[in-house]
Image (tube, rainbow, N blue to C red; front, top):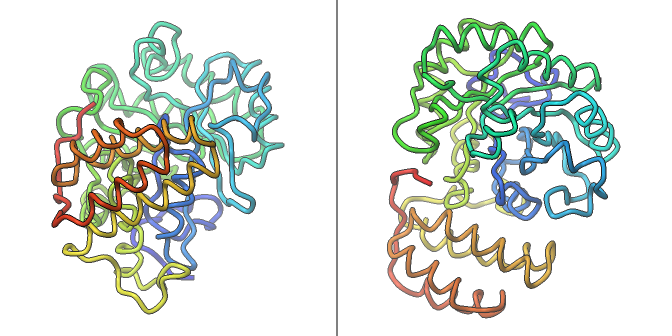
Length: 352
Protein backbone atom coordinates (compact mmCIF):
# COMPACT_ATOMS: atom_id res chain seq x y z
CA UNK A 1 0.00 0.00 0.00
CA UNK A 2 1.32 3.44 -0.89
CA UNK A 3 1.86 5.69 2.10
CA UNK A 4 0.40 9.04 1.04
CA UNK A 5 1.20 12.51 2.28
CA UNK A 6 -0.98 13.25 5.29
CA UNK A 7 -2.96 10.41 6.88
CA UNK A 8 -0.66 10.67 9.89
CA UNK A 9 -3.56 9.50 12.02
CA UNK A 10 -5.37 6.56 10.38
CA UNK A 11 -8.92 7.02 9.12
CA UNK A 12 -11.19 3.98 8.81
CA UNK A 13 -8.62 1.65 10.38
CA UNK A 14 -5.99 2.46 7.75
CA UNK A 15 -8.34 1.65 4.85
CA UNK A 16 -7.95 5.20 3.51
CA UNK A 17 -4.63 5.67 1.70
CA UNK A 18 -5.34 8.81 -0.34
CA UNK A 19 -5.05 12.32 1.17
CA UNK A 20 -8.01 14.08 -0.45
CA UNK A 21 -11.76 13.47 -0.49
CA UNK A 22 -14.89 15.03 -1.95
CA UNK A 23 -16.95 17.39 0.20
CA UNK A 24 -20.63 16.78 0.95
CA UNK A 25 -22.47 19.45 -1.07
CA UNK A 26 -26.21 19.95 -1.43
CA UNK A 27 -27.30 19.31 -5.01
CA UNK A 28 -23.83 18.17 -6.08
CA UNK A 29 -22.43 15.22 -4.11
CA UNK A 30 -24.84 12.78 -5.71
CA UNK A 31 -24.23 9.45 -7.41
CA UNK A 32 -23.55 11.00 -10.83
CA UNK A 33 -20.81 13.32 -9.58
CA UNK A 34 -19.26 10.63 -7.40
CA UNK A 35 -19.09 8.37 -10.47
CA UNK A 36 -17.42 11.10 -12.52
CA UNK A 37 -14.90 11.85 -9.75
CA UNK A 38 -14.11 8.15 -9.29
CA UNK A 39 -13.23 7.92 -12.98
CA UNK A 40 -10.26 10.21 -12.20
CA UNK A 41 -9.27 8.47 -8.95
CA UNK A 42 -5.93 6.64 -9.30
CA UNK A 43 -6.02 2.84 -9.32
CA UNK A 44 -5.48 1.54 -5.80
CA UNK A 45 -6.42 4.82 -4.15
CA UNK A 46 -9.00 4.59 -1.37
CA UNK A 47 -10.78 7.65 -0.02
CA UNK A 48 -14.03 8.70 1.64
CA UNK A 49 -17.15 9.45 -0.41
CA UNK A 50 -20.00 11.65 0.87
CA UNK A 51 -23.66 12.03 0.09
CA UNK A 52 -25.59 15.23 -0.07
CA UNK A 53 -26.83 16.49 3.28
CA UNK A 54 -29.68 14.27 4.52
CA UNK A 55 -32.36 15.34 6.99
CA UNK A 56 -32.86 12.99 9.95
CA UNK A 57 -36.45 14.21 10.12
CA UNK A 58 -37.14 12.85 6.62
CA UNK A 59 -34.90 9.79 6.28
CA UNK A 60 -36.91 7.33 8.41
CA UNK A 61 -39.99 7.90 6.20
CA UNK A 62 -38.11 7.68 2.89
CA UNK A 63 -37.22 4.72 0.72
CA UNK A 64 -33.50 5.17 1.14
CA UNK A 65 -31.65 4.21 -2.01
CA UNK A 66 -34.46 5.42 -4.26
CA UNK A 67 -34.41 9.13 -3.47
CA UNK A 68 -32.16 11.37 -5.57
CA UNK A 69 -29.97 12.14 -2.57
CA UNK A 70 -29.42 8.48 -1.59
CA UNK A 71 -28.97 6.80 -4.95
CA UNK A 72 -25.71 4.89 -5.13
CA UNK A 73 -23.77 2.71 -7.51
CA UNK A 74 -23.33 -0.98 -6.68
CA UNK A 75 -19.99 -1.48 -5.04
CA UNK A 76 -19.45 2.14 -3.98
CA UNK A 77 -17.10 1.86 -1.03
CA UNK A 78 -16.47 4.00 2.05
CA UNK A 79 -19.71 5.91 1.68
CA UNK A 80 -20.21 8.33 4.57
CA UNK A 81 -23.63 9.98 4.35
CA UNK A 82 -23.95 13.36 6.01
CA UNK A 83 -26.90 13.86 8.33
CA UNK A 84 -28.53 17.07 9.54
CA UNK A 85 -30.45 16.91 12.79
CA UNK A 86 -30.39 17.40 16.53
CA UNK A 87 -32.79 14.93 18.19
CA UNK A 88 -31.78 11.44 19.41
CA UNK A 89 -34.78 9.46 18.08
CA UNK A 90 -34.70 10.74 14.48
CA UNK A 91 -30.92 10.36 14.49
CA UNK A 92 -31.11 6.77 15.74
CA UNK A 93 -33.83 5.87 13.21
CA UNK A 94 -31.89 7.52 10.38
CA UNK A 95 -28.65 5.78 11.27
CA UNK A 96 -30.43 2.42 11.18
CA UNK A 97 -31.77 2.93 7.65
CA UNK A 98 -28.43 4.28 6.46
CA UNK A 99 -26.59 1.27 7.85
CA UNK A 100 -29.04 -1.04 6.07
CA UNK A 101 -28.40 1.00 2.91
CA UNK A 102 -24.66 0.40 3.22
CA UNK A 103 -23.18 3.39 5.04
CA UNK A 104 -19.60 2.87 6.18
CA UNK A 105 -19.75 5.81 8.56
CA UNK A 106 -21.93 8.75 9.56
CA UNK A 107 -21.01 12.43 9.25
CA UNK A 108 -22.86 15.04 11.31
CA UNK A 109 -23.32 18.46 9.75
CA UNK A 110 -22.44 21.26 12.14
CA UNK A 111 -21.44 23.64 9.38
CA UNK A 112 -24.58 24.44 7.40
CA UNK A 113 -25.06 28.23 7.74
CA UNK A 114 -28.47 28.65 6.10
CA UNK A 115 -31.20 30.42 8.06
CA UNK A 116 -33.40 27.32 8.29
CA UNK A 117 -30.64 25.44 10.10
CA UNK A 118 -30.09 28.36 12.46
CA UNK A 119 -33.81 28.63 13.15
CA UNK A 120 -34.20 24.94 14.02
CA UNK A 121 -30.92 24.62 15.98
CA UNK A 122 -29.03 22.27 13.73
CA UNK A 123 -26.20 22.71 11.27
CA UNK A 124 -23.85 25.45 12.42
CA UNK A 125 -26.39 26.51 15.07
CA UNK A 126 -25.20 23.54 17.13
CA UNK A 127 -21.91 25.36 17.55
CA UNK A 128 -23.75 27.86 19.74
CA UNK A 129 -24.15 25.24 22.49
CA UNK A 130 -21.10 23.03 22.99
CA UNK A 131 -22.83 20.73 25.47
CA UNK A 132 -25.80 20.16 23.22
CA UNK A 133 -23.53 19.55 20.22
CA UNK A 134 -21.60 16.92 22.20
CA UNK A 135 -24.92 15.28 23.13
CA UNK A 136 -25.82 15.03 19.42
CA UNK A 137 -22.51 13.28 18.74
CA UNK A 138 -23.00 11.03 21.76
CA UNK A 139 -26.49 10.03 20.57
CA UNK A 140 -25.19 9.24 17.10
CA UNK A 141 -22.27 7.19 18.42
CA UNK A 142 -24.67 5.24 20.62
CA UNK A 143 -26.73 4.35 17.54
CA UNK A 144 -23.97 2.76 15.47
CA UNK A 145 -20.74 0.77 15.51
CA UNK A 146 -19.57 2.74 12.45
CA UNK A 147 -17.20 5.72 12.69
CA UNK A 148 -18.96 9.01 13.42
CA UNK A 149 -17.43 12.24 12.15
CA UNK A 150 -18.38 15.91 12.45
CA UNK A 151 -18.01 18.65 9.85
CA UNK A 152 -17.92 22.10 11.40
CA UNK A 153 -16.97 25.71 10.80
CA UNK A 154 -14.84 28.17 12.71
CA UNK A 155 -17.81 29.14 14.86
CA UNK A 156 -19.67 32.40 15.16
CA UNK A 157 -16.74 34.57 16.21
CA UNK A 158 -13.83 32.69 14.64
CA UNK A 159 -11.95 32.56 17.95
CA UNK A 160 -9.61 29.59 18.10
CA UNK A 161 -9.93 29.08 21.87
CA UNK A 162 -13.66 28.57 21.44
CA UNK A 163 -13.07 26.12 18.60
CA UNK A 164 -10.54 24.09 20.59
CA UNK A 165 -12.87 23.79 23.55
CA UNK A 166 -15.79 22.92 21.31
CA UNK A 167 -14.01 20.12 19.43
CA UNK A 168 -12.62 18.57 22.60
CA UNK A 169 -16.23 18.05 23.63
CA UNK A 170 -16.99 16.33 20.33
CA UNK A 171 -13.91 14.14 20.73
CA UNK A 172 -14.93 13.17 24.25
CA UNK A 173 -18.41 12.34 22.97
CA UNK A 174 -16.92 9.76 20.60
CA UNK A 175 -16.28 11.49 17.27
CA UNK A 176 -13.83 9.37 15.24
CA UNK A 177 -12.57 12.25 13.12
CA UNK A 178 -13.37 15.91 12.41
CA UNK A 179 -13.55 18.13 9.33
CA UNK A 180 -13.02 21.84 9.74
CA UNK A 181 -13.97 24.51 7.20
CA UNK A 182 -12.35 27.53 8.85
CA UNK A 183 -14.75 30.22 7.80
CA UNK A 184 -17.36 31.60 10.18
CA UNK A 185 -21.05 31.09 9.57
CA UNK A 186 -21.34 34.75 8.64
CA UNK A 187 -18.65 34.38 5.95
CA UNK A 188 -20.41 31.43 4.32
CA UNK A 189 -18.05 30.91 1.35
CA UNK A 190 -16.69 34.45 1.17
CA UNK A 191 -13.21 35.58 2.05
CA UNK A 192 -10.20 33.40 2.75
CA UNK A 193 -10.35 30.24 4.83
CA UNK A 194 -8.10 30.59 7.88
CA UNK A 195 -5.92 27.51 7.56
CA UNK A 196 -4.10 28.35 10.79
CA UNK A 197 -7.23 27.16 12.61
CA UNK A 198 -6.90 23.76 10.92
CA UNK A 199 -3.34 23.49 12.26
CA UNK A 200 -4.31 24.55 15.77
CA UNK A 201 -7.27 22.19 15.81
CA UNK A 202 -5.08 19.32 14.60
CA UNK A 203 -2.66 19.99 17.45
CA UNK A 204 -5.38 20.11 20.11
CA UNK A 205 -7.16 16.77 19.48
CA UNK A 206 -5.99 13.18 19.11
CA UNK A 207 -8.47 12.16 16.40
CA UNK A 208 -7.75 12.74 12.68
CA UNK A 209 -8.57 16.15 11.24
CA UNK A 210 -9.61 16.84 7.65
CA UNK A 211 -9.02 20.36 6.32
CA UNK A 212 -11.53 22.04 4.01
CA UNK A 213 -11.57 25.41 2.26
CA UNK A 214 -9.85 27.11 -0.70
CA UNK A 215 -8.77 23.94 -2.48
CA UNK A 216 -8.84 24.86 -6.18
CA UNK A 217 -5.85 23.08 -7.76
CA UNK A 218 -3.69 20.09 -6.86
CA UNK A 219 -0.97 22.29 -5.37
CA UNK A 220 -3.46 23.57 -2.80
CA UNK A 221 -3.90 20.06 -1.42
CA UNK A 222 -0.18 19.59 -0.83
CA UNK A 223 0.14 23.08 0.60
CA UNK A 224 -2.71 22.51 3.05
CA UNK A 225 -1.25 19.19 4.18
CA UNK A 226 2.16 20.77 4.66
CA UNK A 227 1.07 24.01 6.33
CA UNK A 228 -1.57 22.60 8.65
CA UNK A 229 -0.47 19.02 9.34
CA UNK A 230 -4.04 17.89 8.70
CA UNK A 231 -4.58 14.21 7.96
CA UNK A 232 -6.55 14.74 4.76
CA UNK A 233 -7.77 17.62 2.59
CA UNK A 234 -11.37 17.95 1.42
CA UNK A 235 -12.19 19.56 -1.93
CA UNK A 236 -15.62 20.76 -2.95
CA UNK A 237 -16.77 22.92 -5.83
CA UNK A 238 -13.39 22.98 -7.57
CA UNK A 239 -13.81 19.28 -8.33
CA UNK A 240 -16.86 20.11 -10.43
CA UNK A 241 -14.46 21.94 -12.75
CA UNK A 242 -11.31 19.87 -12.22
CA UNK A 243 -12.17 16.33 -11.10
CA UNK A 244 -8.79 15.29 -12.51
CA UNK A 245 -7.14 16.95 -9.49
CA UNK A 246 -7.44 13.46 -8.00
CA UNK A 247 -5.42 12.02 -10.89
CA UNK A 248 -2.77 14.76 -10.63
CA UNK A 249 -2.34 14.17 -6.91
CA UNK A 250 -2.11 10.42 -7.41
CA UNK A 251 0.57 10.79 -10.05
CA UNK A 252 2.71 12.89 -7.70
CA UNK A 253 2.30 10.30 -4.95
CA UNK A 254 3.22 7.35 -7.16
CA UNK A 255 -0.22 5.81 -7.67
CA UNK A 256 -0.99 4.10 -10.98
CA UNK A 257 -3.26 6.00 -13.42
CA UNK A 258 -7.03 5.72 -13.06
CA UNK A 259 -8.64 2.61 -14.50
CA UNK A 260 -9.26 3.20 -18.20
CA UNK A 261 -6.59 5.90 -18.41
CA UNK A 262 -3.48 3.70 -18.41
CA UNK A 263 -0.76 5.02 -20.67
CA UNK A 264 -1.96 8.62 -20.37
CA UNK A 265 -0.36 11.43 -18.42
CA UNK A 266 -2.53 13.47 -16.03
CA UNK A 267 -4.38 16.39 -17.58
CA UNK A 268 -2.04 19.34 -18.15
CA UNK A 269 -2.90 23.03 -18.05
CA UNK A 270 -3.26 23.34 -21.84
CA UNK A 271 -5.64 20.39 -21.99
CA UNK A 272 -7.87 21.40 -19.12
CA UNK A 273 -10.62 23.16 -21.06
CA UNK A 274 -11.04 20.23 -23.46
CA UNK A 275 -11.04 17.76 -20.58
CA UNK A 276 -13.67 19.86 -18.79
CA UNK A 277 -15.83 19.59 -21.89
CA UNK A 278 -15.36 15.82 -21.93
CA UNK A 279 -16.26 15.64 -18.24
CA UNK A 280 -19.46 17.61 -18.88
CA UNK A 281 -20.44 15.21 -21.65
CA UNK A 282 -19.93 12.34 -19.23
CA UNK A 283 -22.12 14.13 -16.72
CA UNK A 284 -24.85 14.48 -19.34
CA UNK A 285 -24.90 10.71 -19.65
CA UNK A 286 -24.69 10.11 -15.90
CA UNK A 287 -27.50 12.42 -14.82
CA UNK A 288 -29.79 11.22 -17.61
CA UNK A 289 -29.24 7.62 -16.56
CA UNK A 290 -29.53 8.30 -12.83
CA UNK A 291 -32.29 10.89 -12.64
CA UNK A 292 -34.14 10.94 -15.96
CA UNK A 293 -34.75 13.90 -18.21
CA UNK A 294 -36.39 16.58 -16.06
CA UNK A 295 -34.51 16.12 -12.78
CA UNK A 296 -31.34 15.19 -14.63
CA UNK A 297 -31.46 18.48 -16.53
CA UNK A 298 -31.77 20.43 -13.27
CA UNK A 299 -28.84 18.52 -11.79
CA UNK A 300 -26.78 19.14 -14.92
CA UNK A 301 -27.54 22.86 -14.95
CA UNK A 302 -26.51 23.23 -11.31
CA UNK A 303 -23.31 21.28 -11.97
CA UNK A 304 -22.46 23.55 -14.91
CA UNK A 305 -23.33 26.67 -12.93
CA UNK A 306 -20.94 25.59 -10.17
CA UNK A 307 -17.93 24.56 -12.23
CA UNK A 308 -18.13 27.00 -15.13
CA UNK A 309 -16.86 29.90 -13.00
CA UNK A 310 -13.36 28.51 -13.65
CA UNK A 311 -13.91 28.56 -17.44
CA UNK A 312 -13.36 31.46 -19.81
CA UNK A 313 -16.85 32.60 -20.91
CA UNK A 314 -18.33 30.13 -18.44
CA UNK A 315 -21.36 32.39 -18.00
CA UNK A 316 -22.14 31.84 -21.70
CA UNK A 317 -21.96 28.08 -21.23
CA UNK A 318 -24.35 28.28 -18.29
CA UNK A 319 -26.70 30.48 -20.32
CA UNK A 320 -26.78 27.79 -23.02
CA UNK A 321 -27.58 25.15 -20.40
CA UNK A 322 -30.48 27.26 -19.19
CA UNK A 323 -31.70 27.97 -22.71
CA UNK A 324 -31.98 24.36 -23.87
CA UNK A 325 -34.82 22.22 -22.59
CA UNK A 326 -33.42 18.69 -22.87
CA UNK A 327 -30.20 17.00 -21.85
CA UNK A 328 -29.70 15.99 -25.48
CA UNK A 329 -29.82 19.63 -26.58
CA UNK A 330 -27.43 20.68 -23.79
CA UNK A 331 -25.07 17.90 -24.85
CA UNK A 332 -25.05 19.22 -28.42
CA UNK A 333 -24.49 22.77 -27.16
CA UNK A 334 -21.51 21.61 -25.08
CA UNK A 335 -19.94 19.94 -28.09
CA UNK A 336 -20.23 23.14 -30.14
CA UNK A 337 -19.11 25.40 -27.30
CA UNK A 338 -15.88 23.50 -26.70
CA UNK A 339 -14.85 23.82 -30.34
CA UNK A 340 -13.73 27.32 -29.30
CA UNK A 341 -10.28 28.09 -27.89
CA UNK A 342 -10.98 28.06 -24.14
CA UNK A 343 -9.05 27.79 -20.92
CA UNK A 344 -9.65 27.18 -17.24
CA UNK A 345 -8.32 29.76 -14.82
CA UNK A 346 -6.27 28.47 -11.89
CA UNK A 347 -8.24 30.23 -9.20
CA UNK A 348 -11.41 32.24 -8.88
CA UNK A 349 -13.30 33.95 -6.09
CA UNK A 350 -15.36 31.30 -4.32
CA UNK A 351 -18.67 32.97 -3.52
CA UNK A 352 -22.28 31.92 -3.12
